[in-house]
Image 1 (cartoon, rainbow, N blue to C red):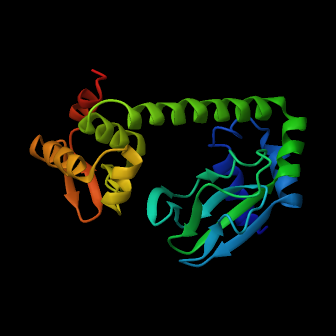
Image 2 (cartoon, one colour):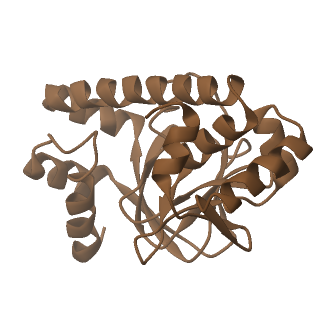
Length: 227
């Protein structure tokens, strides 16, 4: 790795949940010798079910989209980790596809490198386990949100769980396909449209193309039943 990329990688890794307790000197030494970087152009596939690699990726520069089918379910920005959940799964596929939304540079940490870092610093192993535990709680919560309650409560829960921040600090959710979203929430399209209209009329959200701006998150929280 180039010195500038290596220095940036260490800074970003130390900000992540998994590697924030790692010794900086150990990270520097191991990644300098075993880390791998790659550059992807816009539209390139980084991860897919046809290109499985047992690695964790760290986005150093640029932007990438996490997709399920045609729907973009998350956007990765510099400092984002991906692949941690599947690194030790034993499966040879990913549940989602990651594509470059702009030219980006990515650091890849192999499974053997991650195991070495865990062995050299038990705090990394503990942080990894904590990260996976949080993901389990998060996914369980999403299942509860999407399978219980009214259309409004399910949609509000989806907005709150998938919110991102734009450059102005406003929360938004990317919704590319309403039919897909209706299937995800297990509600009819008509119910989904009514829920959308309800939150717009309440001033809780506004739509800008395929982006849904969360203009009043308190109203959305109230709609989920959490007051």
